[in-house]
Length: 185
Image 1 (spheres, rainbow, N blue to C red):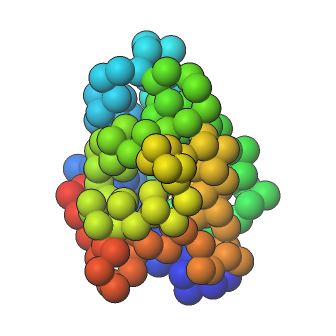
Image 2 (spheres, rainbow, N blue to C red):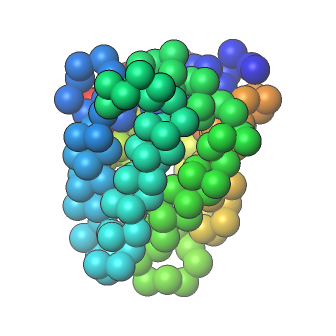
């Protein structure tokens, strides 16, 4: 497992801990799903419902895979053990990535506009500089659009334990493209 992957998931863990209590629980995923759906006012109800369902599935996968003692909470150590294991988390992250990218494409043209991307990533809790750097790393068109599949693949890569030097690393570096901190999401 690469250090970059651990840094990426540590950031996501901190953002997913919406109530800031140091562990993940069902409430965090409900809060995050509602926050992200609200950040996409142009998206239709089916896309918003799919996003909430993806957050529910994310939580259910963690709970099913990791909560052996049945306490209903997931620590950082438990989280890392699951999300960086493709055999345990790939299907969940693929569904999540598809739902998030679809929410960012409210006109269903297969392209994500920077303002929609910014709104969704800000709702999750990432810093603006890192979000801009990430969007730019996806190689937007002259009209400042990114293909939906590019974003989906970028999300999948973010959770890959063996990848480094990927666009998603812009969200966690301290080189002016984000600090890896931000509001809890």
